[in-house]
Amino acid sequence: MIAFQMQGVAFGWQMYALTSSTLDLGLIGLFQFVPAAALSLAAGQVADRYDRSRVLRLAQMVEAIAALMMLAATTAGVASREWIFAAAFIVGSARAFEGTTFQTVLPVIVPRGHLTRAIAALASAQQIATIGGPALGGLLYLFGPTLVYALCGALFLLAGTCMLFIKTPRAVAKREPLTLHNLFAGFGYITRNPIIFGAISLDLFAVLLGGAMALLPAFARDVYGTGPWGMGLLRAAPAFGALVISVALARAPLAGGAGRIMFACVIVYGVMTIVFALSSSFYLSMAVLAVLGVADMVSVVIRQTLIQVETPDEMRGRVSAVNSLFTGTANQLGDFRAGVMASVFGTATSVLIGGVSTLVVVAIAMRAFPALLRVDRLSNQ
Image (tube, rainbow, N blue to C red; front, side, top):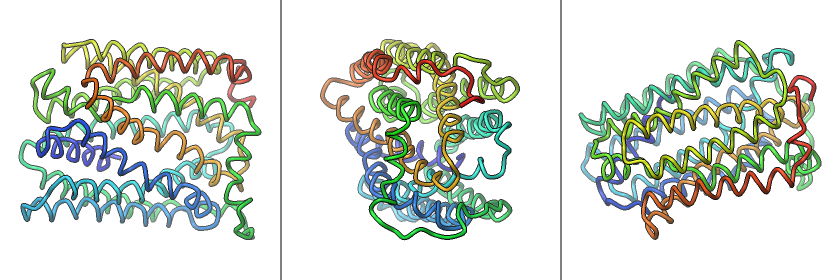
């Protein structure tokens, strides 16, 4: 995660330095979204049929190749927007398998009674990386992108090596024949469960419409007058808020009212997005993004727990694939949306529209998914 976050800083700042185009910043997200969306169903089948630890190792090796490719191009002086797009495409392809498979690991190595706390604890570790990665990437970028890409490649290789020590049993002893029914089984399972379907849909549209991370290079340089270090701190701010609340959730899980809390968190997410769009203060924006991170993390823990508890292990790969398609790739597609709208309406206006749209989505979802709103204790689901 540290390597992925550092790489995101390098991609964004190097692209904006080359082209000064908010549309190109959005296109980075699109080039990650397309392969992730196209490969998500295949990734679900792979996660349910093959050794999950090995799948994760291979994905991280491919991510290392993308970082080293950018290292070579930058060192040779030939790095361009096309090189960055190609590297983003490779990363998106690898993360289709990594993201889906990673979601299936925790439930098979952690007892069900501890799953909510384990998800929160894992989120804490990820958020530490999400704080440190952008901040470190922004600082090291002051010495040039080659240093950032070199360290990213090394960290991806190290991550793949670490996976050698995590053993994950196969989900099923006998593989089912690969048919269209099995390929789309995850969709069918989710649509038959209104709680899971509602949680995934709410997160999908909130991230798709309210995401603003792709535009941080423009905010950092044009609004706040900072360099890559400022962008790194802005990217780290949501993770800082998420870390604080995830540590609290790991120690004291939600006692009740999970559905109402999830909807409230998405409302806070939308409001904070609006405030960020209107802010001209660097420090206020960092505080706002930290609160946004708190709201997003609580929503993520609730959604992930609902999905893992309600899904049998033999279906987890395919259900996780749909979850990754809807919510994981929504980040990249949301980046593209933000970049396109910023190129038409301006950077701040694009984010403002996204925040207002998020609040509209919450109002619609509360009427469309009453079962999700009524969810009380996660352990009882």
